[in-house]
Image (cartoon, rainbow, N blue to C red):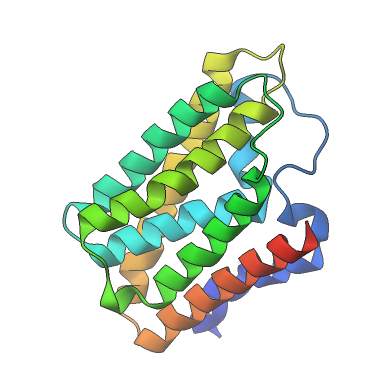
Length: 193
């Protein structure tokens, strides 16, 4: 039963409101709201964990380069997104990022070079970050809210790094199953938006 624990996020599909980070209407103001935002929907949560898994499998400088690049690009895009209505296709790009990252996790044994992988995560980070900024309540403390979602992203990346390191010592079939599960959740989110 233990090998199937990484597949537990699929169980969350039984609770559809959890699948959408941006479907909740109100947020508390400040650090707590920012910290909670990436955990409030499977799209953000799975994308950030998948970045960590992929970074762990790429190894070397990718272990810090992918998460650091993602968080930096996300923070800049969040500042850009404050007070806006969101990107026209932002939600679709976020869901597509989950699909793409799931595929990359499933096929991580044929990994891209770290520089290419870093470039791949930037547009995903921009979409996620812009959504964080656009979702921030206008009367929120922007620095506190931003610090909250940056910390949450780092925690989710760290969880992914740990999961990726754990999975690297398991049969490759598990990695493929986890990646496929992530991609299927992303596809489900995409078609139900």
